[in-house]
Image (cartoon, rainbow, N blue to C red):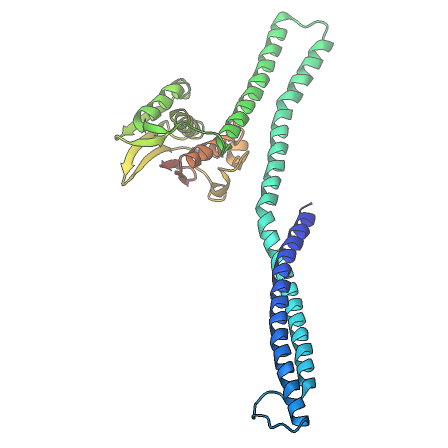
Length: 331
Ligand code: ADP
């Protein structure tokens, strides 16, 4: 599909370039031709005067009329050769440019396909589990109330997982949508981060994690709801992956003209090979997939990055395996 589009674009580039080149050549040809015509007339008149025995003033113009016809043919030949060269060069250039134009679109489509395939894959797991459990239960004629309760409990977990995934997908769509107009106003970062900590305090308590806040006054121009979401994602990850340490440190500060917010944990850390990918959609480092099976879809950091992008900021990470990670947002 892209090869066809590339050829089509190349053809358009060629048509435009050749249109310009041919009209340019025609212009030159007619100009030169007119000039040669003028010399031709002059030359003929001179020859006639010589024949008639009338004295002619000495000139340095070509003596032979054939030389003019020859010059004309040469000009046509040179212009034709120049046009063929332009055709070849612009063909190659056009093909290259068309490729450059289409590559990002092809990449976007590839990512889109991968995204749909990943999302379907993640949805299939809970749906299959739900279906199998219900089918087995329907075949069991002697199911007790306790067994039925357990079944509902398990079904509910699957439904919760699907709900979580669909919420993530909706959020991703919301924050990646460049058309979406977020209301930007002056937001107090300390209050915003404190709200996120408050939102997540039950999860922290259940995980026995102490959140230490080190706040200095800082404000940003942005959307408070999105910023709370961003802080929640980073703090939630610090709790999830902060297994080794029982505390996390959340900082808000002002550095130069920027406001900085960071979350530090003392947990599993991230392998250097994983760091470039953790902001990709659906990416989960091997450690979080295998060991103790920490739940997640690999979408939190993609959402976080989209929110930071919406605010024109930067998100970065420093991490050491087994020692912990620090995610820093600078706006
Ligand atoms: P999820 O946590 O649902 O897997 P995220 O997009 O939030 O998805 O994170 C992507 C991956 O980055 C995680 O699977 C994990 O491997 C890694 N990661 C994120 N935050 C941390 C952290 N604080 N410590 C260690 N690894 C982390």
